[in-house]
Length: 302
Image (cartoon, rainbow, N blue to C red; front, side, top):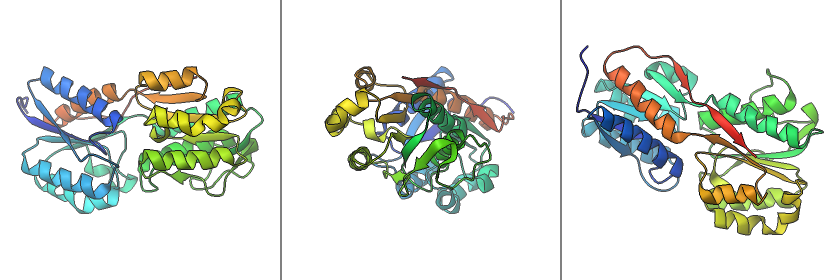
């Protein structure tokens, strides 16, 4: 099949003003421009929600997109609604950052992003390094229906327990010396103020380690610093540990790390993921085969 030039490609993150997805779109758009294509950022502002993402995808189909890069909010709902329209229009889909649930992966051409289980294991490795005798841990995700975040939680539990076959939905109860709070994980709803309320409760409780598999607590570094101020001495001395997953760190997030109010970040390069998503989607539109998964590297900052 001949190359498709001057086409419209869409990237649907979970929120158009979430910095990670803004950075991913920049990478996606820059790569599209190199090929004479145009990119649109599909979605709505504010906290991620599957219904608003679904409506935005339906609107993009009507605009005539040739390919869709999608970070999935809720597989079942999208498959039963907007992705039916995408399929009927013959638009290829590449998922990025967050994949479709395993039963639905035949609906996309490939996945681009981190290996989310291994991403979670990086949290566990750092926690084990900082607290080698284990301790009490409280985890944070955003939504129980989010496949990629659930994979990250699973990876943490695998690493802390020392068991690669650790049951997927089982809280830690002493395995590897780690005990998980019976309300763990928190679900932040992709909301910064709520995540900070939950963080404060966790730090006030008798916990040793708090881990958020996404950026929610440090979405506003000023608000984070204010929230953790009562626990400053415990954080600096590492009596209490906070580890957060983020995209490319902002200057403010690096300052928080330097001040030791964060013990570590697990970092994803969303700009590169955006570029990779476009390149994969371009191949799919041109009828070229794709690997099932293209893995982007992550790094640990401490």
